[in-house]
Structure formats: structure tokens, C-alpha cells
Length: 375
Image 1 (cartoon, rainbow, N blue to C red):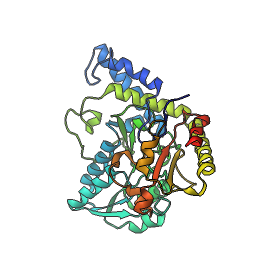
Image 2 (cartoon, rainbow, N blue to C red):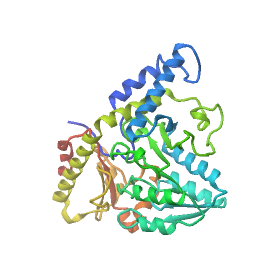
Image 3 (cartoon, one colour):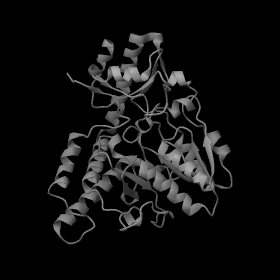
Image 4 (cartoon, rainbow, N blue to C red):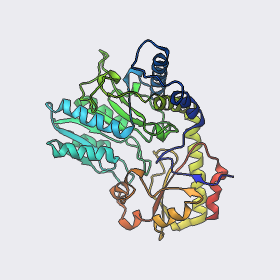
């Protein structure tokens, strides 16, 4: 019997035991700098980074040399959005995003607007997605860049990235996607998505350590990155695009988490779907018409349940559950504010204030969820 049922996996996940074991040597004896030369400690560190890069690339089906290590998706989002628009601004100054993006996308786009870019923020529908028609209608001859979230962290909605990427090819638009929440929960083949030029990844969303992530940045047929202004200048690490001594222990953790996710992906997706259906059956049986789901039942990230407990303040409910069940009122990155995502899909402030998010893990069992029968 577990003392606390942790169901806030969209906020962060625990480190997988195999990830911890892989990291420990590089926190203790294997402390070399991979940018140093000749001696074994440096060589071991360099080899470990290489293996991690290969594992991340395998998970998302891209080339290893298209992976750039960062501190996580917030940095990756800033790096791509600022860096690409800076290099493409002579072609036009129009950028497109959506109103349900993570703050590390929305705030950067608003910053660019403040310095002279033209910004279109597409409004998601009641299911939390934008349509292909919306995106296509927003494109102008000045459009140079778009950042469209792949999957939403609060309601699990999935945008039509494949179709949008085709439009971007046609109009020479650089397409970036914050893929933080879909890694390990959707089968991804970037090799088959030529119109998607960059994505952002955080290790701690799929059982890796905090403080590390990656950017996928597509190279062209000449094996060159697109022109991009680095966010961090300095020692020239990561092909000069992300300077700073590599956090080898964290990168090893990201690589191991990616390896495990690759091996378990189909199994984990199936398990998350089963757990979600089981919990919904429990909630429906226990609470009936006193609950209402904010997420769509189709085309979503498995394992994310966004539900209103009608007439109950969500902060009070989360605090009451805290000793036995860990859930949240919404995104951990904007916990002090009412959810902009739920507002974007049409919920009133009162409805938002009675909503909680439950995000499941493939490492729990159906029997664990029976605790909801005792609420």
C-alpha cells in the first residue's frame, strides 16, 4: 500500500530508478568535462554524452546531430523562438502562436511583439485545439515563424501538427512545437515530418532529472543548421549554439530516460489509456452529475484528466487530498493564476476554480486508483 498516490505527472515525474543508477557515476567518480581532451575522465564523459544524444534521437526518430542539450523546454522555447526570428526578420516580421501555449512560448512571443514583430494568437476551440483552417487563414506573405504546441499540459488536447507542418513547407514558415507533454506518450517520427523544424523537450516530464532537456533543430540537406542566433554565447559547446559546460550527469539521465521511454512506449501508452478509463469509471460512479470533464474524450494525450468538482473550490479540494493524493489545480508553471488554458476554451472563472488536473503514471496500478472510492 502506498502512502501517497502521486497523480501530478504533468507537473513533474519521479526519477526512474534506472535513470538514477545511470546518473550516479557521473555525479561521483566520472566527473570529467567532455570538452577537455586526451585523458580518460574527459573521454568517458564525452562518450556518455554521445550515447545520450543517440538515445534522445532514437526516441523522436531524428539524427543525433540534430539534438542540442539545454536546461529544459523553457530554455529550448526561448532559444528557438528568439534565435530563429532574429535571423529571419529580414524576410518578414509576422509570427503565429496559440492562446493555450505554455508561458515560455506566450511570453516570448509577446516580447517579440513589443520589439516590432506582428503577432497572431490563434484562439483554441472548446476542445483546446486550433483548426487547420484557422492556421491557414492566419498565414500572410510576412509570416516567417510559428510556434504551435503539440499537446497541452492541462487538458491533453493535441493540435494537428502534421497538417500544419505541410502548410509551413508550402509557405516557407519555420515551425516550432513545444512537445514537452507528448514525449513518451505519443509515437513521434520527426524523420517523417519535414515541415516541423524544431521541438522542445524536458527530461523531468518522462522520469528523467530536472534541469535538463533538449532542442531538436532540423539540419538541411547540406548537414547545416538553419541560421539561428544563440541564446547563450560563450565556449562554443553544442556546435556553438548553446554555450556552457555540459551537465553530463543530467544529460546521461535524459539519455537513459529516453532509452527507457523508447523501450516501453507502446506499453506505457496502452497502460495510461487503461488507467484513464478506469479512473473515469470510478469518478462517474462515485460523483455522477456532480462532476464535469473539461477535456475531450478523443485525440488527446493519454493519462491527463481535467475535471470539475461542481460546487467545490479546487484549492480546498487539493489541500484536502494532499495527505493521500497529489493532484493540481492546473499548470505548475502558473500556479498562482487562474488557468489561461481553461479560460481560452470558454470556462468561467467559477468553473476554473472548481477544476483539478489529474495526470497519471504508467508505473501505478489500477488498484491504486481505488482510493478515489473512499473520497
